[in-house]
Image (tube, rainbow, N blue to C red):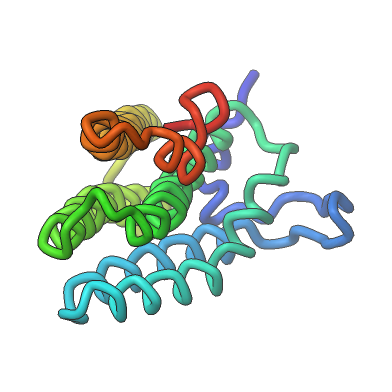
Length: 210
């Protein structure tokens, strides 16, 4: 019979047995999850406070690189029970949204098919999508703490399922948003007879996840 409340207090709150993968030891997935949340929050805050789009991205990129170790380490935690893994995957999807944002927007910054104003709008779009994902992650953190004693096990699991599905939708939306923006560049390049540059910058659809 599956564990109940202990399943929920995972990825964020449950310490799991160590794993030796990649020459490091995981003893506190809660700390890793918090690191991803903090990094995503900082990226959103930076995106909204720095006005210059180039300076903005440099700061966002720096924050992402500083928090990426948490994302990489949490990905390697593989000895969680089923429901605990759903919490872990929710956290990882938020980290992945950050990764899609940083990796692709960095390329768009070097794409002559986008104007400065368009890059500003695109960056704001990524920031808004990441912010929505982060807010859901905060909600997940609240209901997986021991202080949420007013919720029974079913209520907790229902919220975890809902948050997981909503974050998954945002994750898919970020991929779609990236794809559409790159498609705009590709169409503009096609009119100029210079699609090779776009494919060289982003790769083909088969080579990249966009």
